[in-house]
Structure formats: C-alpha cells, structure tokens
Amino acid sequence: EDQVTQSPEALRLQEGESSSLNCSYTVSGLRGLFWYRQDPGKGPEFLFTLYSAGEEKEKERLKATLTKKESFLHITAPKPEDSATYLCAVTSRGNTGKLIFGQGTTLQVKP
Amino acid sequence: NAGVTQTPKFQVLKTGQSMTLQCAQDMNHEYMSWYRQDPGMGLRLIHYSVGAGITDQGEVPNGYNVSRSTTEDFPLRLLSAAPSQTSVYFCASTQGRGGPGGFRDTQYFGPGTRLTVL
Image 1: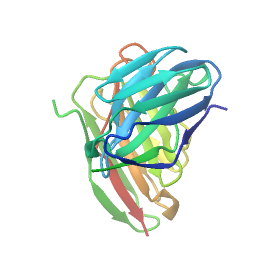
Image 2 (image 1 turned 90 degrees about the vertical axis):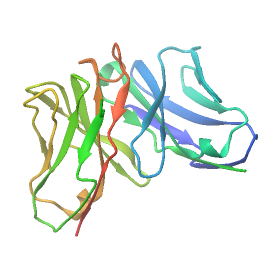
Image 3 (image 1 turned 135 degrees about the vertical axis):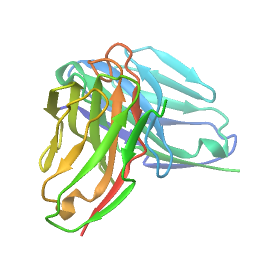
C-alpha cells in the first residue's frame, strides 16, 4: 500500500531562518512526487513535480529534492508570506493517476 | 480562464438529505477528480474521471456518486448525507488523461466546498 508521511506536523520559523520539511514515502514504483502549497480556506496550489532520485527543482526561496525514500522541501530565508501548509503527494505505477497525500506541514514564519 | 470552479462554497445539510456539489473547468482538461480533506487525514481521493463517460473509484468512494457527461463538468452527488461526510471537498483537473504524474501533469485545484452534515 502506498503511503506518505510528512514531518514535522508544524514548524515555526523566524523570518530569515532557513529550514527543511520532510516527506517520506513508500510506493510500488514511484511515478511522481508532488509538492503543493495550501493557504487557509483555499485549494492546494501546485509547486513542483519530481520524478527520479537525485532530481532537484527550485522556485524562489523553495527547493525540492528527491531520494529513493524521501523528499525535502528546503526553505531558504523564509518570509512571512511563505506561511502556509505544504502538502506532499505521490503517484505510483500501481496507482496510475491517483494521488496519495501526506497530512501536511503547517509552516508559520514570524517577522 | 476561470480555471476550476466549485459551487456552493458552503453548505449545511441534515442527515439523509441529498445534494450535488458542482465542479467545472474551462481548460479542456481530460482528467478530473474529487477529494475530501479532513483534519489529520490529509486529502483523500473519492472518484476520478479520465474523460467524458469514464469514471472510476478512488480511495474513499462509498456514499458518493459521480458522472461525466461533458469534458467541462464533473458533479459529485451525495444521495443520503451522513455526519461522517462533513468535510471540505476539492475538485481538481489535469490536462492529460494520465492525470497527475503523466505527461503535462500539473493538477489544478478548485477553491473547495465546505460541507456540514447535521
């Protein structure tokens, strides 16, 4: 059974304090790993897709990396506007087209 | 483009009532899906469709029906609402038939419908 676990559940940072969010996954043949951002009361917003171990993608202060067992979302010098819940999801060859989500990490960045 | 739209934004039902949550997209996407989001449970797939006339079950399909008569619309029906169906519901679409993970795989989510069943 495909599973995704995110840690920590909540993270508080000071503005400018860099950190990383973790997404551990167990799948039968990874097809893609996705990161989304979700603001309160809104739908998830797509950030990145990673397909194979060693792949990295960047967008502004965010950088996503992927290994065979986990993915990290690195946040460099965060700003208060980066405060949100970050969701990780996977799709596998055994579950084509179906996303399995983790529970999310809620990030709060204080000025 | 309006993207993915959902109506209503909020709804309160009594146990046993029926209703339809509407979802529409104007991006000519082939793949559409419904999720529910509950505290501590994350987003869970209810039903999905890879094109007009084709639907399939996701992780938590019981108590929900779907149909896809057009490319644009993918309504979710609750035939007899139960308190366990209190949740936030999200509709999403992806350009390719393969859905997320396939070619051209960015999945766009709607703003959500917050449903309370008393």
